[in-house]
Image (cartoon, rainbow, N blue to C red; front, side):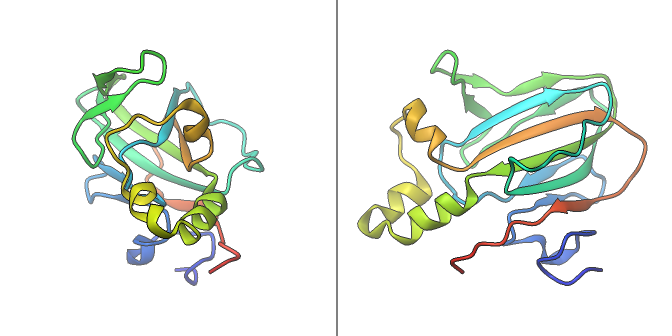
Length: 171
């Protein structure tokens, strides 16, 4: 096991380090985000094979397996399985149909330092920024917050690893 904060295989120290926590049967992945907020920008790409390893545009990158025997990938948030569509600006169910298989998931994290800085200097706005509220953020606000991109491709290898570790310079 690598020392905390170093790229490598994950263990129980994942909590609080902006990582993915995977259930024992690899059928559930929890992404630990910078904020508990109601709205975060998340995009998903389904791929046929592993993508290139250029992670330079991302603050933090984690890979893990996701077992999908049902052929349905469901996205859940802190308020349930309804997500906000940036395209329609409406809530919708978040279920993606895929071929039943084990998938490799690469989770890319961005704007982490910006959000740490915004939260540290938020004062009375901290609660609204951290927890969110019912108001749907504008596209500009969403681009100024933490965001996440998920890449999924079918695999057979059962490993979990941190590909790139974010280190907050202000902590």
